[in-house]
Image (tube, rainbow over all chains, first blue to last red; front, side, top):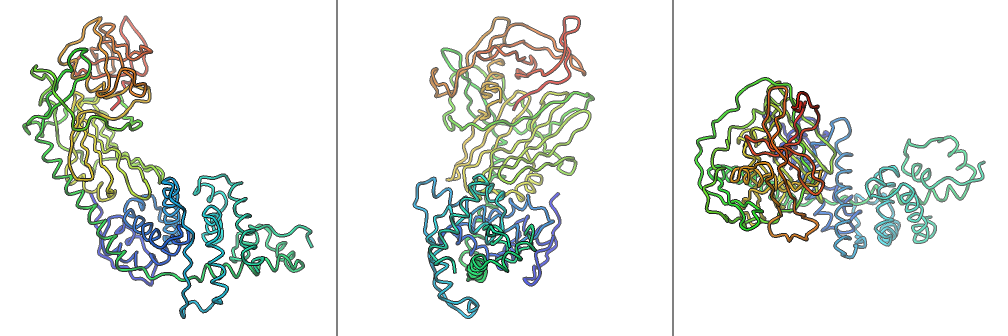
Length: 189
Length: 387
């Protein structure tokens, strides 16, 4: 018998709860809508970093949300939902990139977006621009490892699994990424 | 002060204020004395500040609408399939025998009566078991090309029961496997029979691609029936595992005669039906031969010395990927099972002349997995059938 779902609206101020996740599993519209409004921005940002393209990032987030009822089958409600969702998105973005490479399409360089708004005053605009430009000049292979390790806090073992490379390769790529960033940013400092 | 600088990993952890640092005190002590590492850490913290404080785009309503449209499309696919199922249930299958070499029996659909829908499986008691073992997927080859080559009245006609579905609430086991490839198995194991529902899904590029939806009932260790999902049973499954836009293939075993029904949905929503099965056994046998074989046996009852060669329609005799298989009946043999005797033909199959048995009653190929001979009769614990 299908689970009897209570219509519980998700309050964006609180984390997704078990009932929200049940509704997501069942593909309830309101749950998808709520999850999208809560998480899609951060997921788009992550996917964009990994794919290097806003349109690809949208494709990735689209696929992640459409397949949520499926992928949630594997979600064990012990960890943080948003962390899990970020991992699913990272995996989908990397898969997207792999397909692009297998189709022999040119990997995209990161589109550098120079936006300034009030919410981003915390970091100096010139630093932001320099970092984004430097990141955009990293090869996808180096950028993926760097972002997964640095931003997503993956271990080398997890990176190795996600990228289908060895742990040693992950470590080497991280070192190369940092070396390259140092060059591009004038010794990072 | 340590002479070696902090590793990149330690610097990264420090820059993101992580607690996941083995010896934080030693790292801090080194930092206090090492200008290079302090500079490095400072630079990394600036990068971290950019990345963590970076612009989070406002998700657009257009993307949300696109997601909702895709999900609605998936739900429509579910509904359409159920209506397809109902129309398919009114079909039956006649069979034909390929001409000259007596090789391939192909199948053509005919109108079918629903009179067997309510047939039930009789209860009995046995301690035998059977195995359901989906194997590697092989691509379809003859969709839409079924032709009847013989004028004979099919002996395998509409007698194969298409019965009611499994009661989902009585299923006792459920198993999930890993994310990339998922196999969901629900089974209801009782002394007299086993019901099993198997759903397999591949995740390709974040989209679910279904490989098979199958349900089987075994009784006395032999598959005796396969069931259609009822709408109310199918929907919970399908709600849980929505279907992507890729080609869909559904496979149903359709009864004791060994008929296999495969329904393929193409992107244009055309429904094509074939009776071939597209699984290849681990032993290397092309199991569509099994299906066709049972039909052939129905038309040409085997006897000692009977032999036939089966090929894949559309494939040449030299095609090594789809090798022809030869079966030779070595003789009649009675197999003693815990619940009684099974009359079989002992068959030698394939280039290695592997021993299989053909159950005389159903014409199905079965492989007996263990047992010993007593008083001139084989006694076995299990019979394995592959589907």
